[in-house]
Length: 461
Image (cartoon, rainbow, N blue to C red; front, top):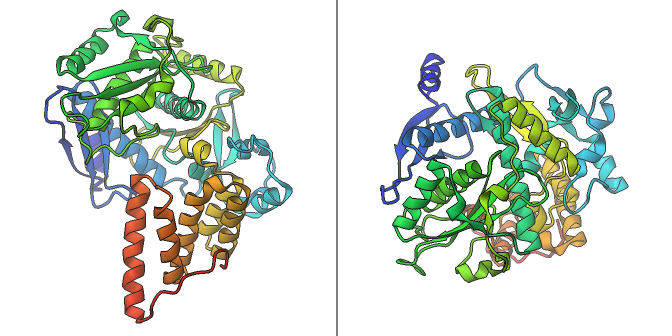
């Protein structure tokens, strides 16, 4: 942590405004927030950190800022080839890997393939942990599909890759658990032997927090633990927190999920704070009944274990486990040259994402997103509408994108109508904030024009 702060001073960029501890101390599990400085161009103004100790939690918040800063400033000049897929040759990742979304399984339509092949991307080398060699991949395509999932920064490249791998696996099994809605084994927490994990459990139970942990590992061969927690003393005026944690060792996965619960709840499980994560936001713990396995709880030692004293061996163990279920992990080195702090973006084509899985986000949707980014708003809106026609479940996301396009085209009244439709589709809190901000702009622009809004005709772009 000291080395990173010294590096920030050395490059004379104000990337950090400050780092604050935000928990009240009730549970004694530290949570830190790192607020971005004036020279830090990340999309969000702050990053959060968790860990069993103050030092680990503060470092976590700081390194999350490093990974986001490295990501938003990548690819960099001279480090990529700007080209369409149709013009690429050589060691390019096989095309089916571009389309391994849950709703398509790598088989795009002819028209979709033609559109994709003509779009320009920044092609960068991605190291295949399976084949031990680089392949060229379209960076923006995967960055749009995965978002921040798979980003990592750390002390060494091995540590960083391992963390990125575990995060992608964590998101993958969380999406599958949420989609399949099947019972999973409950973990007997009395079998926990790790002193750090045991101390964290005591901090929850000592404050009367109800906690249930489950085996989310599924077929991955890598341990993931799901956790549900709530505070009976304040419920129902507080939240039920539901999240997951993945690591190479079962008890390290438990430590991760416990600190993640605290990061989401910050001591008091407040309703004005907890926005939910990649798993559902339950209004009552009974809504999680589909997870409960009627069989006896299992010892934590029964979960898969790919740990080793050597992090490189752990990476190899994770890769073998993922290869067995048909996944090929790819690593893109996004280390920022000014910082020199290892940062990576781990991509695993075919792994599931919460929104892709639950909302049916398909290739048409992501083609629309790319066209929108490139400024072809009409073409983008056509793709979003085609995605809706194919699968109505995607309507909320596609209407949001179409409304954004209309607003960019200064068609304020039409955009406003679609934003209202999005609000009727029960968006999550983040999307609600986006809609409220956009509606405010639309209303102000309509008032400035002196025109009354006219209802739009569906499908007329």
